[in-house]
Length: 505
Image (cartoon, rainbow, N blue to C red; front, side, top):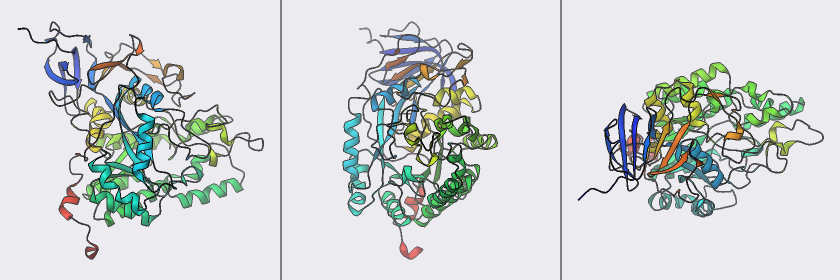
């Protein structure tokens, strides 16, 4: 009796994981990786579909764990350009197979479970890729804190985010005081929930903004002046100090842009503290000069923290190479540019024809360009590229080894297949080639030399760049319940020190 055919075979590919690069054929059955075999050996095997990678890289699908989609209007007049449908459509065209987006709790809501359910309804049956949620906590009242246990044990949500010392108008509705931060850290520690922190000093930021406005400096470029690097490094230091106060509770500093903040993170890591960090493509490919464009054009690159300078970019690349940064995420937070109702231009008035930087919705689109930009930069070893764009995200956020790896019999068949080196030549990024619902990309005209040729989710081809583009179906993506973070050493201090002991302070 002949064996049943495989569902999919990828032959003649170069498989890249976070630890190895080797030529293997990959066989898929029932949504799982089932076999790795010597290159070319499965070319004549029976399968429902065979893809010839022609020497291209075959990697675990991208995992983007910092994505903002269809969030309620907590950003002044601005609201997200992308729904779960359009955002995940863009994700798969960029080689991503899983995202983790945010379920925002608004200040007037006393329940994080209610916020989670609201977000589930937005995503359900609308996603092209698999997805999970972080809780974005803005009201850590007693009821909300009491629900953390249910989040972790039953809802599959094992991470949360809070904004500590963040910004003027855009984030005031989300900012927490130090006592609230400590309560969140303690409760997260008790339930082994990873806490993500956006660290900028909001009081200083507001003071600088007032000073700039008093000097009639309103243009988009002054967004950078209102948030100099010291605001980030100071707040990063404070976040690390609060983590250490609660017996070295693990934290992740998100979207780090400043080398001094990165240095403080590195020092904490060297001292054995469970401090982790994320950076984003905007801090590798954009600079503050991109905010200094004619008229209102600079608003396209307004995000928080802002892009820094060329020397800072090099330092952030070094941090990716040496392990200071655990993950490279997109922080996809799109607002349409030419939109005076819900987009960037909501801040333009007759009195301020180039807007007021204070009120520009903060955020950039980037979910589709994250992998092509980073790979084409050719600054990371291939294994490091996979580590920071997929495998570490899976480990950090409780998805590994189901996601982020190519382990036969265990890993979902989530893969991205790139073109063979040199096949594409130099290709310029244009917004017209992207699949989000935003009317611009901050990377317009930037050259890349590779792009995902196929994106495969649980064994099904959902993106075929040369054979129809988006070929997956809306609703095929499913919610993934996540476990505790499995990144090496993340819970060691919690397990060694046990219950937070006030008498030990």
